[in-house]
Amino acid sequence: MPGFDTLLPRPVSVSATPGRCPWPAPVSVSAAPELPAEGYRLEITPDGVTLSAADAAGEVYGRQTLRQLAGPDAFRAASIHSGLTLPCGVVGDHPRHGWRGCLLDVARHFRTKAEVLRFVDLLAAHKLNVLNLHLTDDQGWRIEVPAYPRLTSVGGWRRSSMVGRHDGPERDGRPHGGFYTTEDLREIVAYAASRAVTVVPEIDVPGHARAAIAAYPKLGPDPDADWEVWTSWGISTSLLDPSESTVDFFRTVFDHVLDVFPSPVIALGGDEVPGATGEHGRFVREIAAHLVSRGRQPMGWDEVLEIEGLPSMLIGAWQSDTAGERAAALGHDVVLCSEEHLYLDHRQSDHPDEPIPVGYLHTLEDVYGYEPALTSPRLRGVQAQVWTEHLDSARRVDYAAFPRLSAFAEVAWSPADRDFTEFLPRLRDHHLPRLDALGVEYRPLDGPHPWQTRPDAPGRPR
Image (tube, rainbow, N blue to C red; front, side, top):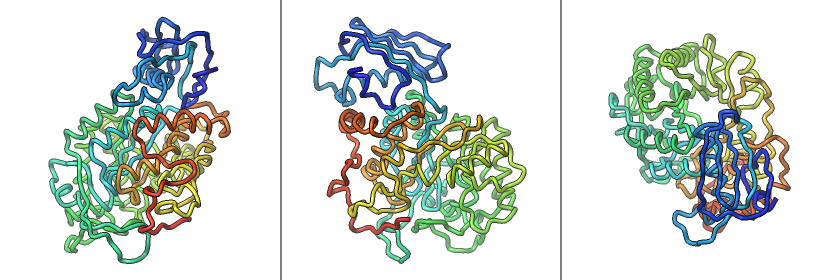
């Protein structure tokens, strides 16, 4: 099927017919409620295109497919060639999973508003539909909360950062910071929505909260201590004090989050809480109940399954797919985002020049070969994770995410009968040129460019 065998993610069905259609082409759009959610049908003839869509998202995805069919130059910011054409035929398509997410950690290393908008564009180009925006952590607080200005004036920057991953005291001596105003975040939300991407915010409690404690020491275990925003990577043992006044503080924080983000799901963290007592579990339970009372579904990482009395939640199963099975058995919805398979900050090869090689080895083929183990109707979908302790620029994010996120997009969207040997030439010959046109500094298939290496920064492989 010439022309149609370039598409990524791979569509459900394709049939080719003779002829070519000039591009840009007239596109007639009609509603097709009989199609599955987010589905679309393209009928391309020499005279134009008919796009039938199940909903607004389906129309977005149909147009993304047309752009792919027109060739890499259709992804440039301005037209540089005339005479682009589309192959004629019919494409019928809809996603396998309803939640096709990617977490972007902007707490460890801040990404500017413009960089987040660009990342949204890259998600949309891959028919991914959730941006899990990780806004707070020990190393920085990135969301303006008018009631508590010190969260950003103090918690929004740190005096230095660990270089690479090591156990020593070395730091780079360079202040790092930034945050999003309320108007910035409303703009990001609206921009993403126009591209069929839902922004799910994450405010981490009761651990990963050192930046908040630095801003308001009364929130922490010792209000008289000289707290600062953490300059290390890893798991801080500084937890929020689970008092009622701290819960009230975060009710106010989450109320502001609810006002900014219309997402039906709001993430509250709950992970990596060393030595937590029952009172910290109560803290999570009360915040979760508060979100439910406001008509939203709380999302937590799978450690929260140890807490009794939780309302029905969405669980991000990061420790294993088995944790997802347990969550489903307890009556929770599940998104699979296993560290063993879908953490894109982890090293991509054993190549000696791999920059800051941390975590497990997740090759392009490994990511493409991931198949969710959970078959429960509670499974909402899958999510890749881009944590940024070791990704201090948009260029480093590009390198870590792509092309593995392109492979993940096909896992999330396309039918299960995938074949890496069929995928690889589509990626190499057709999709990487699209990423080139978009200006994405992805990792080359045969190893990093010299300027993508980081010999100055140690890693910690697992």
